[in-house]
Amino acid sequence: MPIGIMSAMREEIETLIHELEVTEKVVRGMRSYYLGKLWGKEVVLVFSRWGKVASATTATHMITDFEVSEILFTGVAGALDAKLEIGDVVIGDCMYQHDMDASPLVEPFEVPLLGRKYFETNPMRNQMLLKATSMFLKDLKIHFKSDEPDRFGITQPKNLLGSVASGDQFISKKSQIEKIGSDLPGVLCVEMEGAAVAQVCYEYKIPFNIVRTISDKANDNSHIDFPRFATEVASRYASGIIKNYFSSYSI
Ligand code: ADE
Image (spheres, rainbow, N blue to C red):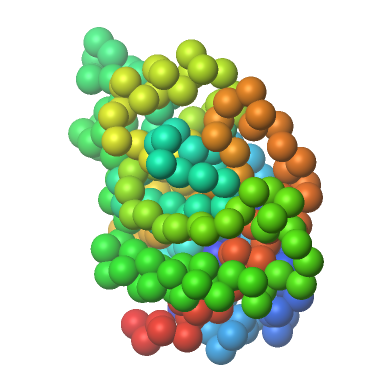
């Protein structure tokens, strides 16, 4: 069974497609699914589009139509934790939906009928991803021909394992950061898809893991040159980390 790789950044998937020995392309529900071999592993690659609905439907197709054995999500995120800098990497362990609130029927953030406030990612794969990411960040300069990391102020990037919060909002206001920070203490970063895909994987009982590169600090400056960051930085991170991850992968 292939490994499903999803990203909400088109640029990341395009970079991976360049490395893919494509066997088939299938278009379904406004998404293009690329099947083939990536660094020796059978994979399905797809650009999920943005938000929880877009990513949940894509994940469902990955599982039911393409029978992926697990899903790895890559992409960018806004930092919530003050120790994170642009260019750092978060490997998600607990995935929350910060905009889920069916109270008073169930507690805020609890996903109705599942009785849980977060979904866990696969611990063994998280350890492999941490190693793959450390290796990539140690040799960061090798992966960049230009001074792109410096341009974005990336000097000594680090990686952390921790909680991630997803919601259908691009976070750029202080009031939003403060609310998520006080509602869900300990969350490292925010994005718009991960916990939705984590829920689908939980429901279908397949492993889920996620790697997010910090692109902004979820504040007034979070409109940074996104297309450039995606092409020049995030795409190189995603392909470098996945290549290292696959080389250690023997599951
Ligand atoms: N993805 C990257 N940055 C983000 C932000 N500030 N809010 C939500 N999703 C993001």
